[in-house]
Length: 222
Image 1 (cartoon, one colour):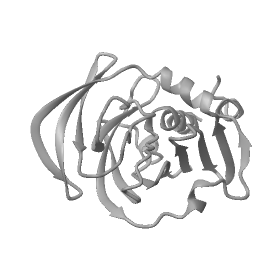
Image 2: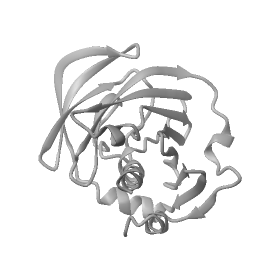
Image 3: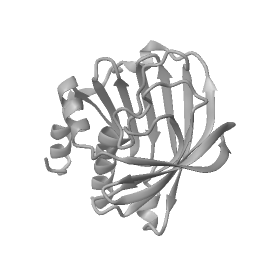
Image 4: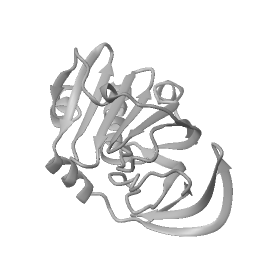
């Protein structure tokens, strides 16, 4: 049950922190990220954590795909309408969690302001030149790597990195009620290609509900 609760918590983190949406029409395609677990984690828990993110961009719409041994999560966001859909396929059960503009804006308002301090160190990630920056939020500082070579405007608008300008190709994500899981997320491929409109709709077979209802169903509380 601990692992299931971790999955629910991870979904919550993705909804409120890790969604990436944009409004630039210049870049259409996807960025794929490797996910590595840092530090010591129980083997059974580590086996349930995701190892890859796929983020698709098409105009105002963004789609994040993430899979683990527990199931899959897809987050669909629209920067113009501020609406969001989370598709969850867990142990054969499929749910579509919808958030209105008001709910999305409320979640954004609860994200603390972050401070970005640009450094001089550079490196190449997935073929793009990146600059290192220190990102400080809630008294904690982590390194992020940003590129301005991918034409996506406001790419971090509803993430904990909403104050970061540019596209992040490497960063950390802390998961867990006490920050016990530290994930290093690094881009491995950036590819321009057509993205179908059907990728931003709810497929057949998904039960629609709110995120709160979903958490209550699995004992996750409010």
